[in-house]
Image (cartoon, rainbow, N blue to C red; front, top):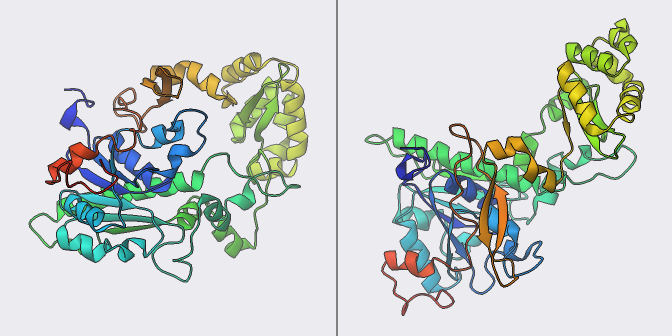
Amino acid sequence: MSVAEGRALPLAGVRVLELGNYIAAPTAGRLLADFGAEVIKVERPRTGDEVRNWRLYAGDTSMLYRTINRGKKSVVLDLRSPEGRDAVLRLVATCDAVLENFRPGTLEKWGLGPAELDAVNPDLILSRVSAFGQTGPLSERPGFAAVAEAMGGLRDLVGEPDRPPSRTGVSIGDSIAGLYAGFGIVMALFQREKARGGDRPTLVQRTIDVALNEAVLSVMESLVPDHLAYGVDRQRVGGRMEGIAPSNAYPCADGSSVVIAGNGDGIYRRLMAAAGRADLGEDPSLQTNAERWARRDELDDAIGAWTATLPRADVLVALEEAGVPAGPIYTAGDIVDDPQFKARNMIQYFDVDTGEGTPRRVGFPGIVPVIGDRSLPVRHPGPDLGEHTAEVLAEIGLTPVDQPEGAR
């Protein structure tokens, strides 16, 4: 049996209830669904998850929603209503985990807090994602990834030194938090399994608290230790990386650019030889990263002068032959055509409603990490609003007649 078949998937048999909007918690749900978990996504009546309308160019469901919510089931419930609350509690009794990313206190206000969930399922794992966590002076403050990226230290380092800070172009803070939320659930599942027949993990141990700002802080490497140990405050350096040189994007003769990472000592010498500047490569005062960083402008000018004389393909061939890490700066179209992505099944195609009357063949990112030699198959893009309401609620004894308003 291949790993893609049924229960061979690592998380097959795990059931997750997702009470999440936007990107962070749904990203965690997507990861769990990718590897076999049954993820039931609860959406509000009529509008559903607001991401359905983000970057919506046509139709009624964005490709962003279809991407982040792939492999899930969509159930429409009004969590503010007694009927919706009852349906959620019935579902919780059948689930291994609940994912949510409401502002702290919201679920408690609706009678769906940890105590109520634990009462119907004392083995339940609860993964909670919020701007600043469930405790502390900022816990009740709302916030999106943009705020978390700023307060977690990332935004201050992105962009050119003579301009205001920039964004990365995607909701990276949300995605990082989603990774931690998904990892937290898998970690708690493992702990719960180890405890079988022994002491059951407490509610506190089964509650995963992910704060967006802390998730961002956690990937900031030695930003804080460098400040406290040496009094160093890192600065924006554009396409470079503080203290590492040469490593940057360089323009080519055909108008495209390449990224070259020539910062290893031996790699640096090979790079400069390939660029026709062996004199700089062998310069005794340029043999360490610290020395090269002090002369980074000189080195970037020399490398850029070389790349500007050749088309991108020729630059990349020369660097590959020299054993220098380098790559093109891809657009979406480049990614779709790339043979490496194709070989590992990293773009997978589905017929999707794009509002044009007939479905369109659309490619979606594959599943990471790879198990085997190529991506597992994506089961299906994000579902239509309420597509699985009748199916899922029927399992807990609700018929089309007594389903909550807006769920039919």
